[in-house]
Each structure stands twice: as C-alpha cells, then as structure tokens.
Amino acid sequence: MIRVIRGLHHVTALAADARANNQFFTGVLGLRRVKKTVNFDAPQVYHLYYGDETGAPGTVMTHFPFPGMARGRRGAGEAVLTEFAIPAGALPWWTAHLAAAGVTGLREDDVLGDRRLDFDGPDGDSLALVEVAGDVRAPWTADGVPGEVAIRGFRGVRLRLREAEGMTRLLALMGYAEAGRDGALVRHALAAGNGAQVVDLEIDATARDAVQGAGSVHHVAFSVPDRAAQDEVRAALTASGLRVTEPIDRDYFHAIYFRAPGGVLFEVATDEPGFERDEDRAHLGEALRLPAQHEHLRPWLETHLPPIEG
Picture 1: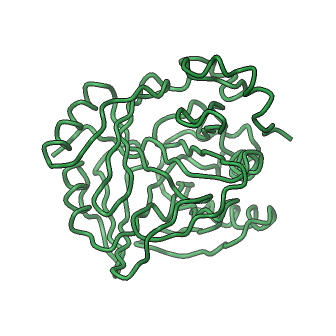
Picture 2: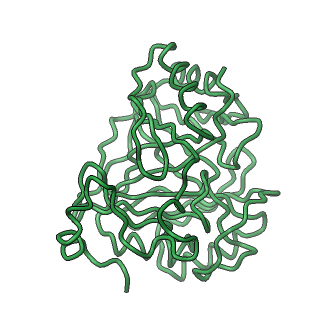
Picture 3: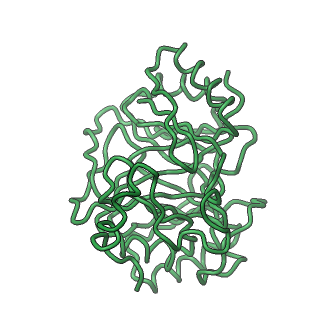
C-alpha cells in the first residue's frame, strides 16, 4: 500500500469564459486567485488557480477557460461532482448567499451523514458545499465571505463509473479504505491527510460516456510531499500495471498522469515548490506568469488574452 498520498492536491476543470469563471470562484465562492498563467499545451488559453491564501494542496480549483467552448455532458469515466468543505452550521448562510447571486441548481441534502448544498457553477459545473466539523484549515476571507462560514478547501470528489472493482483496488493501493455506502454510492477516504481526503464512487452500469466540455472536470490530482514520494508512488502504480507518465515540471509542482480504471484521468502532484516560487504572497495571482518555454509569447498574449477583471 502507498502511504505518502495526503489527499487531493487540486482539481482541474474546463470553462468557456475566463471573466465569468474568475468572478464566480472569487466573487461568489470567495476563493483567492493564486495564479494567473497559461495552459502549458495551449498557451493561448489561461490556466487560472483558485484556493486559500497560498494555494495550499487540497484547496485549489483550477480552470482552462477555452473561449466559447460547448458545455460538457456528465457521464461515466469522469469526476461528476467537486465538493468543498465549509464549517458546521454554515449551510443556511451559503444557501441565502448563492440564491442572492443567482446561482442555479441549489439543493440541500444529506449524503452518508454529510449535510450539504449542491449547486451549479457558471458552466453547469456540478459543485457542492459540505459541512465538516473540526476542519482547522484557515480560509481566505479577503474576497468578502466571512471567515466563520468560508470555504476551507476541498472535501473530496465523486467519480461516476460503470463498475467499481478496478477503481476500488486502485484506491486501496493509494491508501484509501471504504468509509460508508448508500446504495450505489460508495465512500473511500484516507484515515488522515490534508482535509481533502474523500473519494466517492457512484456506480451506474447503464451510464453513458461522459463528453468533455465546459463545466467538465479534466483531471483529479492527488498530493504527495515531494519528488521522492512521487517516485515511490509512480513505481507502485507502474508495478500494478498502470501506464504512468514521466514526471513533468509544471512550475508550481511536478506532475505524473495516468488513466485510472474506468477512464478518469488522475494526476499525482508534489506539494513543492508551491505558488510562491515566482510571486510574493501578498500579490499572488495578480500578474500574468508564464512558463519559460512560453515567455517569448508574452507581447502577443498580453494583448490577446481576454481581460478577467471587472
């Protein structure tokens, strides 16, 4: 069993409009934009990161906003729900706040003992706020959400699959254990971690294939402390028969990728060096930061990337 995975590192989704995306995750959800950079493989598109004050692993939702992208279709082989942790008792405030902001799809529920509020993101993203008692992670509060109700980071993700066996074996290898079930929904969790340590499996043998588009989760990333731990994970995953990429330098972390059983794209990302490697903490996410291989594109990008403020 792998023992160095700490929970989620980040979740990356697709979007259709950078300004609307930025306004929702900062102005409505109250997260901090901790990095404004570009997609390494498509530098004409932003890569926007939102999280706590420093973008700590387990708090960061990231987006690739492709202008005008058609909406995705939820289905098998993807993360169909991203869950954020809020303090116990905070749900009434959030229900009123999201309703006042015109957010759609609001639905309070109780799932496996968790009191929660499901809602839609700006591209039909499937999101939820889950009350979690005793979450000690410090929230970002400078974007207007009071600290006593603010998002602490991720709670976890829900994956939709046609069958559970392969993913269950993988999660067990990664250190997860079953922590509850309700019909076709099975919860897996780490005994200890960074707070973002829940993976729920929604099993539907008749589910149609997911179609990626705006509002879809592109990949789910798990956290390890450093390159040595990542190498350990890569060796174990490869030994289990998975095809895992070589480590890739993403400037703020190193990443490896693989397709999990059922088709979900997983990443394992290092906690180091973090988002302060090229910006002072007080000014994270303000300036356009570019990877070295795309720095020569700065003059063009600064005039062609759409403005996201205002």
